[in-house]
Image (tube, rainbow, N blue to C red; front, side, top):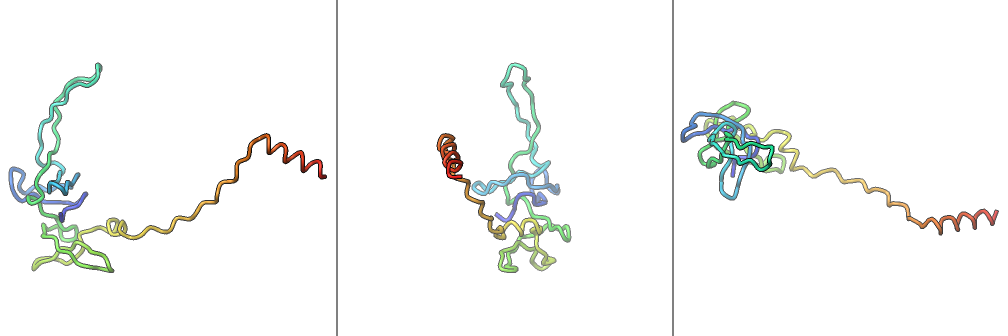
Length: 145
């Protein structure tokens, strides 16, 4: 799937054609995405507790990923997603004959792929001793003095 979470996409077919929104959720197994403000449906929620009331909620539903196109953040045009290797990383770019060639991934998304700095090892915890044995060791030290 070429669409990722928090991508800005344009709906190209269906009832919501021409509407833009942010991707809220992706499901790669079924090739579906939830886009903000697109494919609104009514859900009936039953009251689960005594003090709650039943209600009808209007929320987004899944839309097929083939019905959306990623919008390039640099030139604000819908684009097909092309892949290129930049600095040893596979990056999504705005390509094709009308493409600006700039990466679609933000700097924050690119940094996620980098390896994290090595974690400093913590000092080993001090050996725990029982109070009786600790007192006995202290009394032996006092007797030696």
